[in-house]
Length: 92
View 1 (cartoon, rainbow, N blue to C red):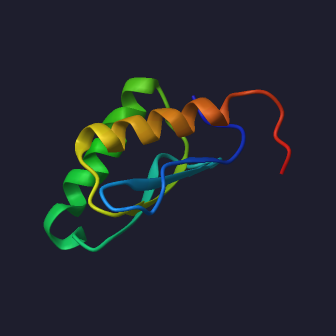
View 2 (cartoon, rainbow, N blue to C red):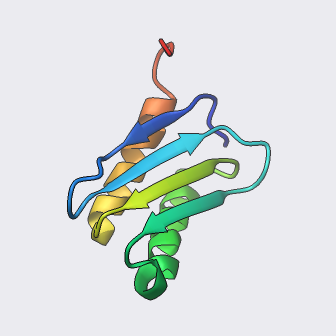
């Protein structure tokens, strides 16, 4: 499955993550910005990818701006953004 329109969920508040999804014709791509990227970047990217895999998404560009989010927050933000990308008409 691939998404049809851009969406986002989350915020730049402390302990949160802003997830932005963009349609793509390529496999899953993740662009991560985080103060703790050196220590936890691979773990954050893995949490995002696992959530997308579980949802059956194969083509998407993910832009993630992390502010210290825990795994359950990352997963919920990805799922919310996915839900928003599949809702009714977009009014951008």
